[in-house]
Amino acid sequence: MGKNKDIDIQKKRIEEYVRYNYNNIESITFTDSKKVPTGSTYVHGYINEKKNLSFSAWLTPNTFEGEFTNSPELDQLSKYEKNKLPNEIEKEQQVEENNINQSSTWFSDKYSQ
Image (cartoon, rainbow, N blue to C red):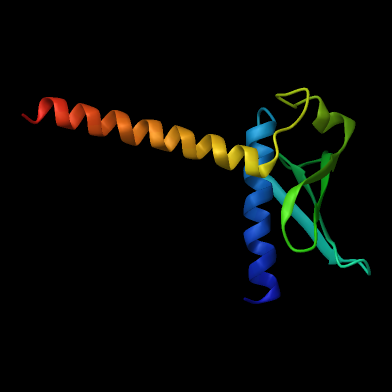
């Protein structure tokens, strides 16, 4: 897998994290990314076309796991006292998906007879 494709995958993960943990997200703009000597990569960006709603996300070494800093202005849009990590978000989404699938299976089983 190429470097740019890896970064693009992680940007999607960062977007999911931001949309899950913050209110009123209309758009996410990534401004730059750079690999540092330690092997980590940082990704900078901002929200809703407002540069004061800025953030930095760290990939360690190649995966975004929730290392995230943001401006005080963006912090005011936070939904939670402590942001949920990407793996927690994924688990919650899987549970919701399973519940929906089980409900639709129950409904179709019950009413298809």
